[in-house]
Length: 460
Image 1 (cartoon, rainbow, N blue to C red):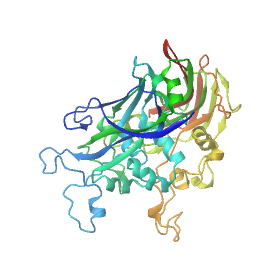
Image 2: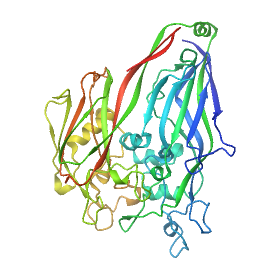
Image 3: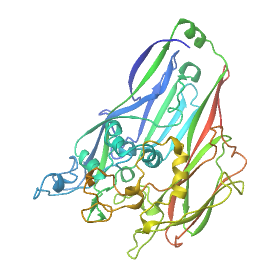
Image 4: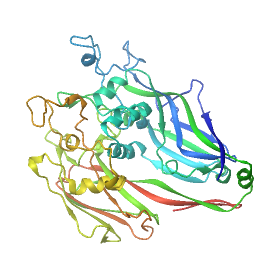
């Protein structure tokens, strides 16, 4: 194929409110964009959501109502800095501004045929981003895109101002390498459903080891646009694209399934409904922590039991896991027995490695935030275990874990048929039966989009 040039495009949403301000608090939780059908090719990886993000104080009767938050004011303002109200509200530092996006729906413009629906998008990124990006990535190029940071205190301080962002939409269809023929697709609709305030904003700040938050905040998105690149074909190729023809496009899609776990020996049986599943992974969070201002709804902690005070502060160790297909262990023939060595200062690599491999082939992993600091919470203060006088503790990531379970079902990237047989995950742990934990499961599967004079069709 021959292309004459690359065309840079930026469009406004079709449902922009009068002040171009979005969010649940504003009453505008849906953002819609339309990319018209035309004889050009869309570069999916170039699609960016652009705008401005801010967190606003909402203390009724206070002089600070309607103003930007003042995170870490005492810490960053110096000793004795005046702080009439110290807020500790920010988006998850590993997800950034993307925590405001609950769901992304892609459909064709001609007849609104659904192409991909990526649900619970922030929790998907909460595992994918730290597995595939290092601390330096979070503090540099990824930070410039979506306001992330390797340390939550740095992220919180950065949100004291209006944050400009230009972040990619990391769906399966838009992450593919092949350009998308807009004329054959009949155009593309992108609908973004925004997250509730309590799901997008969490404390992320510890004071003497205790998470704190006022809850009296909301987020605001302003001046949203969508930018992307179009490949302009030469005359011969444009003539071919003008004709309605038969063809097919293969692309990966991201699907989500929600479930809960509460017992020490529990099996999940999930119908994935796809013929070409490439990988599956799951992450956890205590169920009461979802949609709670005082908790990070996009964290990826280990399974946890309630402690004496009713808080989920006691880790429930995973002791054995088994993946299955139709009741038979697959793709690993035997269960994985997890052990903790080194007095708790070594991660449980038996299942951590399969989780990382389900997101990106382990042998190709060269950037990751996963390390002893995140998985084991090694202390970094002077005189404490793990402290090295040659390492600046402020450069290390937060000690919050990247926990979860996952498996690459097909290392050859062909895909395994789960359309007739369910996917199974058996988890043996030290859960006490009185501490429900939510499990967010994501599958990466190959879809085939066929187009013809009769329309388009998606085959899972």
